[in-house]
Every structure is written in C-alpha cells, then in structure tokens.
Image (cartoon, rainbow, N blue to C red):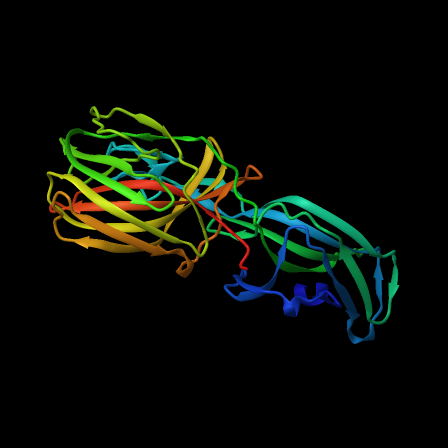
Length: 383
C-alpha cells in the first residue's frame, strides 16, 4: 500500500545516439533477466536524449534535473568459511602442499561464517554531470539533450562472481519528498593491455624425482617440471608451479619453497589459439589420465581482507592411459569458444581477474598432480 502512495508519477526514458548501430552485449540484470547494452570504447563520446513525461496530466514540482555519466565498481556479499582442506588449493595467491592447512573456501565447517564485505558497497571512480533543467514546474512531456564528449573510460566493463564494473547514464530528478530517476547501462571494451608485473609465486614439493615433463606452447619457451610422490599423503593434490623456463634438470628438497618470477610474455587475445606439446622425459609412476583446464580466479578486496573465487572455464581430457618415456601429446585449444574476459590486474585497487592453464595428472591410486601457469588475455580490435 505504501508503494502505491509513494510511487513516482514520472516516466523517464533514456535514448543513446546510434545505439541500434552499435554492437550489443547481453548481461544479466539483478532479477536474472538479460539486458542488451551498446558497446562503447575508450575516448568515445556518450550522447543521447532524456524524455520525461508526467503521468495522468499531473504537474511535477522539482528542484532541478541533472544527467550523470558514472563509472562504478560494486562488490557483492561474500562469506568466508574456514575448513580443513582435503586437497591443496589457492589461498591469497599462494599454493599450499600441506593437506591439513587451514584456509578459506571449499567444504563448509560448523563454524559461523564471517561477513567479508557488505552488500551495496559501490565505489564511483568516474562521475561527470550536466544540468538539464533548473528548479521549476513541469506539466507536459519534455525532452533534453546531453553530450559527454570524448570520455576517458579507463577500465573495461566486467561482471564477475563477486564484483561488477559498470558504466551508466543516470538521470536524477530532485523532489521535496523523494528523488526520482533512471539508469541506463552501456558496456565498455578496452584495448589497453594490463600492466606487467613481477609478482612471485611459491612452489612446495616432495622428494624422490619420479616424473619429468616438458610443457611447451606457442607463446612460451619450454617449461620443465618434476613431479614427486615419495612420502606424500594419498588424498592430497600436489602442486608444482614453474613460471619461468628451466634450462637444466632440477631437483627439489622436501617442503622447500622455491620462488620464480611470473612470466608476463604468455599473452593471448580472446580469439587466439593455444598450440603446444607435452613431452614425457621421465616416467616412474603409473599415470591413469591427464586433464587440461582453464581457470579464472577473481580476487576482491586487499590484504588482509582479500577473497579469492575460482571457476573452471573449460576442462577436457588430453590423455587416457599410461604414457611412456619419449611420448609426445599435442595440444590445440581455441579460446574463442569460451566466455573469457581480458586479464584484470588490481583494477582501481578493488579487484583482479587472472587466468591459468592447469595441467592435471592422475595416477592409478587417484592421486592428483598439477602444474598451473598464468596466461595473460588481452582484447584486440576485431578488424
């Protein structure tokens, strides 16, 4: 009943110039509906009209009408659940080997959840405003033009699991009781490559050299890595991460962390093809099959209140059966068939989105061994 008395007596319609001729992107709205948004690029002007109509011939007394062009980063609700992991996973970007380590995500424990960040937290990194009408009275429909010239759109639009970066036109009608208005989203594509980084990652391995694999693909040199299984817990997943090519055989000590700089040369565009080969140089364990997957990891917040959310974009089996020494497995992965975005690194100090190639080997005792390599995905002009 209250909604009836306080319902806005105004209809607002926002039209963008040439929106029918622009490429459209379908995005999910808050009510699980799909909305089409026209695509804009960095430096383009955002021009259009605002039509305001008063319902039922009533008059509208207002304190001013304005239009804004806004860039906003919004974070969704997230909870952290501590649990005792049964297989190793990522926590704050670090790979763990110890099966009993305590970190967040995965199987839920009986402990109460900790609220990570609040619903409705929005940060506006861009805000441009134009006045459409001074305070006064409106009795009939009126149309107003607006033009935001050569707007710098620093970041690409993004809708993830826990964060959304959006650009929109907002019309605000100031009134004495309650303001009225409307928003209209656009979608921004950017050709700016992400900044290079020299962040380090850690490796923790076991002992007893038993498997030696060389992974080579078209945007990187050969990457050698050893997998070790002596004395490790059968139910765990054992990570071995090398981000820089090794030029000679390499032996590890038990639980000895080794740091390597991330390789920033592994760049692919959204329609690219990953072509590579896997060479088995030494095989002393019985491998049952091998999988290759692309993982997207979304990081929100900043340390120590940082939250990682990973999802598998695609996964497929590339080997079934035990390999022998000297065997080669070709890889050809077309990225254009998957729902990918460019790599985002520390966007406005709010979030990052990174992609990884994940190579998993499973032995006859169902132990899992994997190597994870970060790849950088960029957007290039379609023509």
